[in-house]
Amino acid sequence: MIRANENYSKLKASYLFSDIAKRVNEYQAKNPEAHIIRLGIGDVVKALVPAVIEGFHRGVDEMAKDASFRGYGPEQGYLFLREKIAENDYHAQGADISPDEIFVSDGAKCDTGNFQELFAPDIKVAIPDPVYPVYLDTNVMAGRTGGFEDGRYGGIVYMDCLKENHFLPALPREKVDLIYLCFPNNPTGSTATKDELKVWVDYARENKALILFDAAYEAYIRDPDLPRTIYEIDGAREVAVEFRSFSKTAGFTGTRCGFTVVPKDCMIYSAKGEKISLHSMWNRRHTTKFNGVSYPVQKATEAVYSEEGKRQIKEQIAYYLNNADVIRKTVESLGFDYVGGKNSPYIWVDGKGRDSWEFFNLLLTQASVVCTPGAGFGRCGRHYIRISAFNSLENVTLAMERIKEALK
Ligand code: PLP
Image (cartoon, rainbow, N blue to C red; front, side, top):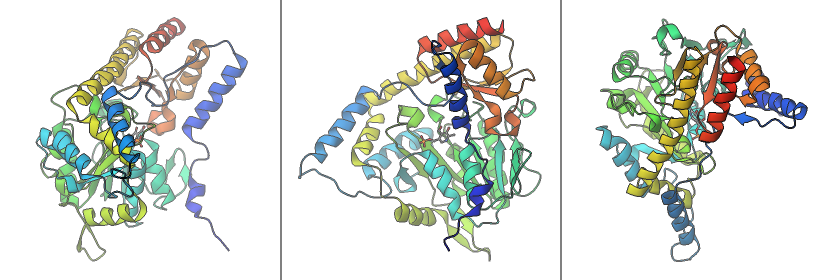
């Protein structure tokens, strides 16, 4: 008899964005004339920049001739791209990461979801609340949790991110083995300073733990004092894996490219306490289960690091950050507390005690604006909504005018 992995039955029945889509569709069906503005799901709206398109075309043209055609490439990514990443994202920040510590992939969702496969089933996992749901759900699928009760899975160490702690989790009281961190954060938009990250790096070194650091929104950091990679922190090479994505950096949500950094100094342990190289394990996993990102996409990604590419992408990110400013100013003028939007495309708004779905419904029905109810990201989000800056300036401006009118 073919038996199911019953851990899947522990997963919450519905997925946040399908719930939202259902409510939005119902509203649209009842109000066919309503022009709905979507500031919910974090997808970009701007076209790939010209330098990237040129790189993409060059890759496609090479595939059109036998002499330059490429078949299977290195699973870890072409060296031309890994070298550019090491130089621009790490060496430029004073972080010592070599190209062979970089694994190019089809995005950070797969990597953040798959990485937990390398660890024993009975490790203690610490996850922030609220959180990007992938970290949690993939640990549920792997059987590291109990059932879902009162908004939480048994067995997980939840790290509350609240106004009181400036949306930065405190070190867990009990000893944990694996820690997920994400800065700039999705959904809260909060950031962490070098000193704040150092606390986690020191904890991981003292406790033989590992940090999985999701830096998918690194490109949105405006404040020059904030770290752009966890490897700016002393000792992080021993205890941290970093995930990056070109989705929000360069508009690659539909193009698909990201990468994961696994330093050779990172060790994990056998039951007997013997050291095992995490780099070797991820290399084995990646080369066994993944066959590389397509050549034209890697050429397009390489162009992200050209002088023209860097300039054009900076302009695109400035566009979204300007949208975030418009949202922040509106939220502030309406007297709401919020975090984010300064070094992040997300603004996390405190609904003044309102339930997050109630706040979502209010904005949908009174302003035809879609946001994301914070409850979908965890129990600590139940009185918050997330507003995303990923839309046109025209739509963001109109949405904010409507929200002002609805809530005045
Ligand atoms: N990590 C975080 C925190 C995200 O918000 C997202 C996408 O929304 C991802 C990872 C996934 O990125 P990708 O498109 O590279 O799979």
